[in-house]
Structures are given as C-alpha cells and as structure tokens.
Image (cartoon, rainbow, N blue to C red):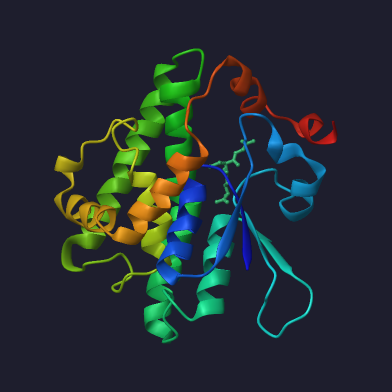
Length: 232
Ligand SMILES: N[C@@H](CCC(=O)N[C@@H](CS)C(=O)NCC(=O)O)C(=O)O
C-alpha cells in the first residue's frame, strides 16, 4: 500500500493520475495546506520542504522498511521504476521522458506557480510581475506546442512527463493563456483530459476539497513563509 500525502493542487494531481493509471492501491492522507498541515512535525519528517505531495511506500522493492519520497518529479520517477510503467527502459526513449519531466519541474511548474501568485493571489497587482510570469508561461506553452506538433505525447509514448505537465495546463485560463493559440497542445490536452483515469484522479480531488478557495486566513499560512515558519 502507498500512502499519498496530498492536497488538491497541480503537484498533487500528478500523483493521483499516476496511481490511477498504474492501478496501484493507495490511501490518501489529506494535508490541508490552507490550514497549515504542511508544518506538522509528522509531515515534515517525510517532506522537509513543507510541500505536498509526498508518499510512503510500505512495500518497497526488495522489502525492508517503508520508503518515503517527496518532490513530485522524484515521486513519479520512483513509482515508474517500481511498476515498470510510463518510463521506458530504452536509453533514447527514457531520456525523451526525463528531460521533459525536468522541464516541467524546473520551468513550467515554477513559472506557472508564480503566474498564479501574481495574477490571482497577490494583494497588490504588480504589472511588471504579472507580465513577466504571464509572458514566460506563454513562451513555455509555445515550446510545448512545438514539441507536440509531430507526436501524440510529450515523450513519444504516454509517460510520467505527460502526467507532470497536464495538471499545470488545466488552469490555462487563470494563467491568461488561450489554448486556441496552441493547436497541438490543445489536441494533447483534450486527449489527456478525456482519459477515464485522469477523470478519476480529479474526482478524488473534488471529494477531498469541496471548497477550493484561498481566503485571508489561508493566505497568511501560504504566503510570506520564512525559515521561522518551520520552527514554530
Ligand atoms: N517542487 C515541489 C513543489 C511542491 C509544491 O509547491 N506544493 C505546493 C502545492 S502545489 C504546497 O505544498 N504548498 C504548501 C505551501 O506553500 O506551504 C514538487 O513538485 O513536489
């Protein structure tokens, strides 16, 4: 059994998508990041960066003590290696997947995350910051659109790269992007959206978080964190 320490955000959805796709048994442990659950000592033990997602695998390959993993890219790689699914073994095919996985982790995720912050959450609307992240998201969507011009999926075959990227394209409207401007990306997006497994993953989120909003109280927990936030 895998315990998935999870909240209903793009990085959380990556892992429910994988687990649904692979058909692995898992138990969701909700970590309400608006309420500050990410600072609980038991959670920090497995996720020292106070971020979801994290997993604990109680039946790791080779047996022994449970294995815990934080960082969504590391979790996807771990689960792909555990199951032998969605990460090809062939050297050339594998590198196609890993480079786009890292592209998401180091590029699209952080840039779109800042886009969400400055467009939606920042109490002060700062045009320079909004333009910077909306433009960078736009550039990255263009990179992805070109990548998808001659292949069905980002790595060639359906893989953990698609699972990492898709949840960050779901909020394209609030990122101020129009999928019509990116026809290959749009076609790919719709093909992932229509997968029964992906629908099941998002349905789980709707069960767990019936009111997905960030109010004044949760803004105080989520924004302006410093080292002191971790030593409470
Ligand atoms: N690079 C990390 C980022 C994880 C991350 O930013 N998680 C957010 C939710 S999407 C979170 O836990 N936020 C809690 C907080 O900001 O305190 C990963 O991909 O796992």
